[in-house]
Length: 228
Ligand SMILES: [Fe+2]
Image (tube, rainbow, N blue to C red):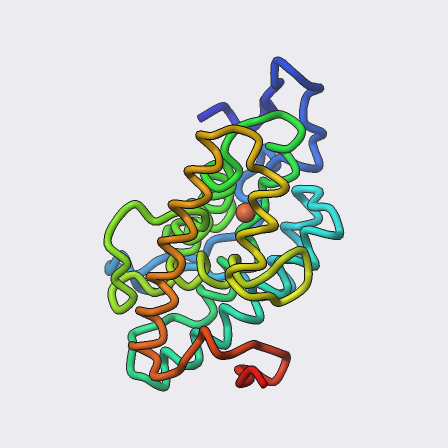
């Protein structure tokens, strides 16, 4: 990784402004000392700290609105998962959802994979691999859709596919939106179709594990709402 005091200079664009790159003195957020167990006491940014990262990485307003809605759905899923007895760290789920598109604007301008770059940024500034994993894999999970063992990344994929811009929609509506906006080549359309098939599987698995029919439900600020 490039030295922190030397911001990258993309060949096809201007250097990043210092305000959108971690400062040379260390992570943007202070990572507390950890216990001996690798899973114990790891740092989880709260909502306010996630929104500070949006500022630090110059995230545009429309992506912030989208991320708020994705976080709302991911949080409801996390609460249902806890009720169903799954081992879920709700603050990590919420932080991952809030940060999932952190690198979107950068890759729109300079190219590249926004999920992977966002995951790298998030692990850099939080030191938390679980949150970064949800960001890095929020487009596609290249393994079995095992909701019980990989709840966080699968919940972020699903929540993201239920939000079109800032509106909560069905998987079909979101799929159509992705095809129209990004389906410029046969290769990309095939990837979007593969992603759709995966998210249908995730919806079925989540519904089974959480004892709800997500396909027949929508979400609002109060939680899960049965579609009329
Ligand atoms: Fe994204």
